[in-house]
Amino acid sequence: MKSKTSKPRKIAASAALVGDLVAGSRILAKQGVLDGYGHVSARSDKRPEHFILSCSRAPALVTAADLMEHDADSEPVGDPRKGFLERFIHGEIYRTRPEVMAVVHSHSPSVIPFGVTKTKLRPIYHMGSFLWSGAPVWDIRQVRAENDILVRDRPLGAALATALGSCTCVLMRGHGMTVVGESVREAVFRAYYTEMNARLQLQAEGLEGPIQFLSEAEGKGATAANRGTHERPWELWKREALGGK
Image (cartoon, rainbow, N blue to C red; front, side):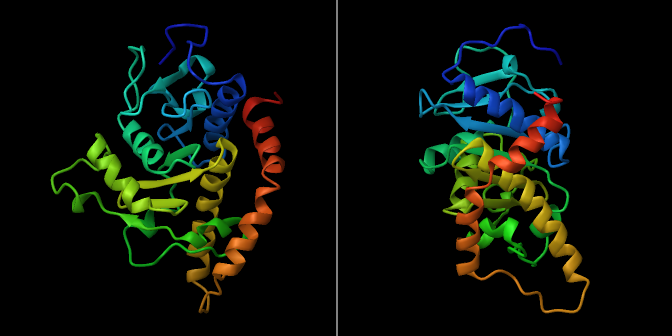
């Protein structure tokens, strides 16, 4: 799919936020967290009740011209292009969590098993420390028995946001995960390390246990410490994803 215009449309977002959204989409695709599906959004830094999300396009191909402004009801603002069906994931989280500035939804492969079994996803090492807050599983069937797994409207988005609660990550049964952050860079960091934490936990489950997970105190402490280092992986990942830009 090609954008209908070569120039970015006027949206309520700074050039810095636009750049982070484009980079974040491409980074997570490059790192294998997103594939042809999934999306990264940000709360508008010029109109906080709105959010910015790409039109319906594979994350690795997203450019500034693909970004669309969405209103508080998750509807595109003056833009006829096809948007993501599951944009309600983003809109309803922004509605209920005013401190959240970015959201990532993915079908991260190592995370899927934790959404369909009784095993809880827990922080196994310091890079996944933010998971100390919990990773609840949301089952769409509890809201709508007849469904296609997709969060295609506001009621489903609101139910997902409620399941997320005050956590940083919510798992979606038979679907994937959604993580939040106080910036695009933090949300990208969390999406990547949720996948990595899940992979390591799956490996550890096959060894002699019990697994020594991070305590709540360790999780809180490491999360705070890691916040000061997000620029380090971001610089590397961005260079790899954008070819040195």
